Amino acid sequence: MFARLFAPTVEVSAHCDLPCGVYDPAQARIEAESIKAVIGKLADNDDPDFRTRAVIIKEQRSELVKHHLWVLWTDYFKPPHFEKYPQLHTLVNEATKLAGATGTKGTMDAAVADQLLAKIDEIAEIFWETKKG
Image (cartoon, rainbow, N blue to C red):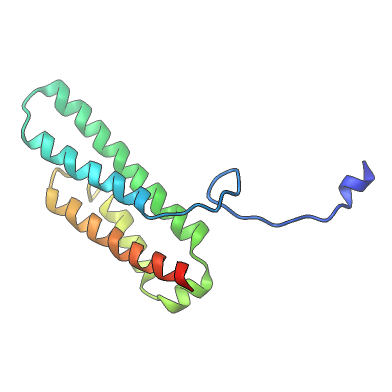
């Protein structure tokens, strides 16, 4: 018992309960693409049941976008990344707002979904640059 108390520890970090180390902005992008597709389907359908389900799905996907971006922001990106890419905080903030209540979660505007996709692409570009170094 005492041996376990005094055993060396190893520090790990990851975005899930197991330290898998897998991070990828593609997760946020896939959800954002789904949002844009749902917005398009909503525009072409008058069935109230379909529209209700579609809005719920769009809102869920918007929350998932925010979740995936926050995981990158809080768990993957480190101080050296923010020093090298000082716009990163602003990009993540703008992207999560575009997925929030004033963005894709609260609108049926496909242009907002396009803006969200563009922000995710900017974040992805930085992400992949950090993986090179």
